[in-house]
Image (cartoon, rainbow, N blue to C red; front, top):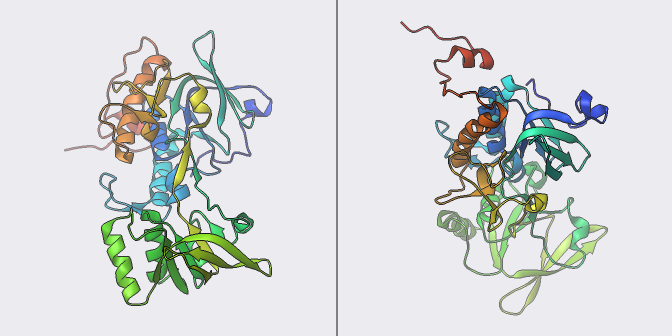
Length: 366
């Protein structure tokens, strides 16, 4: 794909310490941020994109790249990674530049009404508009509070699954009672490709926050001795020869048992951190940006918010909703980027201008 994705290769202006001038700066490279590139591009507005993660796709790729998504229009099923790949292909004609592994640390209004923006890596921008598509901020996993356990993070202790093959053929303990814990426990207990040697699901109580169908399936597997479920909490760990050999599990009966393992997966949920966005002086409601639903503009002219970061009456946190918001936000931005110019709605099916932009032939209908 002909996209500027390498954060190690800044633009010529950035190499000389000069600010990058752009009409639109998108904060967040998740699905909604990527689709924002497309909607802006249709209106002749080119964009730069910033994300704190080292890759595009946002939390969709970071948290569930292999999990199926079923509610994207006209796509019966796709994974988080497939959705991201398709969006990247869709925005390829607009050649956005990505600035990855950095976050916005400073944003201020200029005298000429544009914005000065500085990132944590010192990249500077002058932009007419800003689009906040940062989900609910950066996610940090809630960690296991056991003395000494942190030494094994990344080798035997994990808070998310990036490479399922790491757990294949291993004695695996999965901790948690939500959908992520159940989904991955079931996956590693049944997958032909990634099946673990053994799977033990550990939760502090009998009840679950996961889908009832997943809970029923888990119990059925336990009855067939294809996995194990224990009620209890990890209260200690036992290293041996530099590796995590056992965890100590305190049960509801007051007895502490030792549970051998190779790998430990912990799903205690994620703690969202709004980060520097909270310091921008924008109107907030319960740590989300308040927007006008005509243009999805925030309380500051020229700053828009799309996706899970915003709030308004009737808001639904769906990728589908974010795509709709991105379309209206692009039209709102056009009035700022091209003041005095009337922006006409054109259809990608019939517009020769858009066909030229997208690099496709205009169809001829009999």
